[in-house]
Length: 252
Image 1: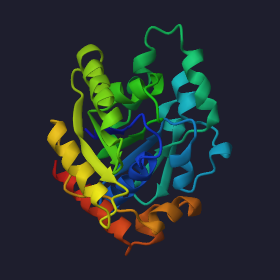
Image 2: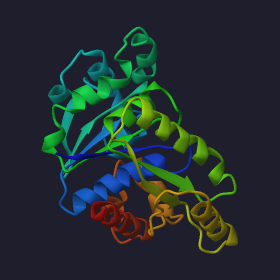
Image 3: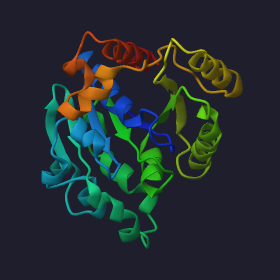
Image 4: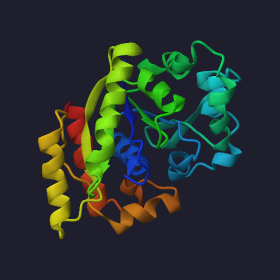
């Protein structure tokens, strides 16, 4: 039975999708069979794996509305060892379409159950908001991994997010745990990055990964080529960091 990890932070621009893409790719590089699920209507994870989001017939949207089966929604081998359920702008309407569905918080979970045992890990990229789509990701997931940017307001949204995780755990998914926190956009040349890391470590009870993801121009470039960093520039500092993070996550 595969482990499902939701990668979420309601703040935008913290490296959430970058982490979802590159952690998945690094795990695949280490021989794990991965399913990635893009639950963000922006579809950036879909594009980041080189898939044209506007040409995909069956996406998370069709899956959640029951217009296709889970198997029909899966795009095989977008990269070696990685299958995908894609997303595009249509997904923005799903909240309204399912508003009268009493089961709306569990739609994704019920679909993913069919294929969970085919993968070592299922990685879900969440939208940058605490919406019904994020709740669906959390009811589907075993754990939540939170990327945090090394900047002054890093802690601000974290307590709210942890509160949401606890609400989902108590009301909807008692199995849900906080996987941990990973720092992104770390700049070793500034005191601020180190201060933020120390501040978060002393203020939260969650696991903080040893690996920090550096500010890295190659990481920023890779999505525009539809490639994860392990393919775009496997020798870069960004690729090395995500391989190390993947090893930490796999060790558990």
